[in-house]
Image (cartoon, rainbow, N blue to C red; front, side):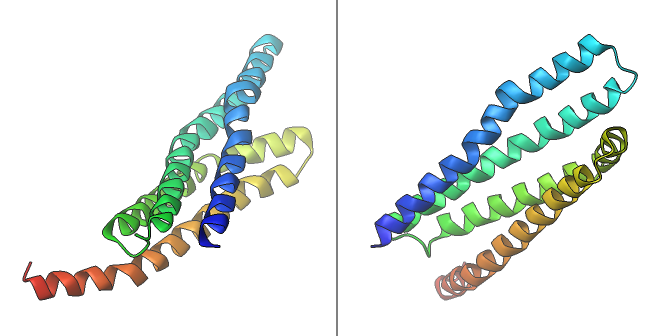
Length: 159
């Protein structure tokens, strides 16, 4: 039963990463090409938007990889190991990096929302910051739940 649910979660991690990878490979370069061809005076806004998206994609994929490793540890019955704590710590740092990278990008979301007369675009930027902050807090809580166990082992061993 446990392997079936971790398999489902591994597939979910893959499904989450696939559209983002497609966007990075196909969607964002097409957007940059269109901005360059139109010689728009607002092209700098799109370039700033692209920089924020690509910078945040790196920790996003690293966090997905760490989540996949964590699920593998669960399959191997190493869910309560130092490796799991390290994976959770890496996921937490990646989520914090994503949040921090989108904060300076919010003005670009605002300008695009104003140009397109679509205030929902601003909510997308805020939603990404909020979601990654929630993930960072959740990973920190799980890390904290697992960490005292290893601290007590180190105290027993005299390290």
